[in-house]
Image (cartoon, rainbow, N blue to C red; front, side, top):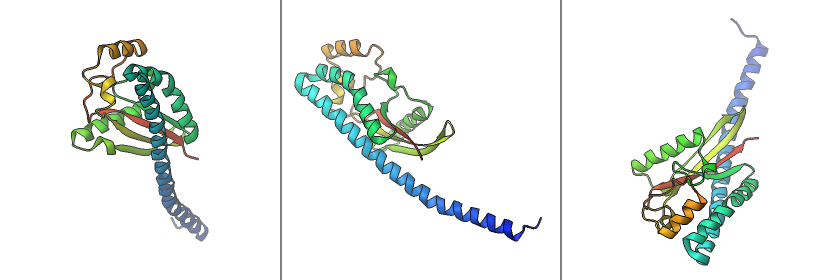
Length: 195
């Protein structure tokens, strides 16, 4: 079948548009990645600062109480600043409201495989553009490695009995215990619709 000159020109223009969009999409994705990394840094900084204030005020029990009441508000503020959704999730949940969706579950499992292969959890991240409800959405996750202090006071293998009482009261379905330094505690998870 022979193409008309007009059909050839339309096809060539469509191809040029696609080729031109490729680098733009890559640039947009790079910008979204940088923005997501910054959002995690801000969210983590605020959350850690709040936890450390609680630790200084009254140790792990006070920190857990502060986290229990403040973490949701901090996540909402971070989400508003980001223009999307900012939160945390894990394979071993403390708060069941943070349960991973199917995409997050797959990423968390890949983080565990990467850890087993020797990758540094502090450098682990994953991002991609996915289709959700007919929209293009940028998704990003960054692993949260377990640090010796203060993580293990509330997430470690040996938890002080008074801390355990507080954990059981605040989080009756808590599974986020038994960690050792260097394991992946969970991940920050972000998503943002692409305009």
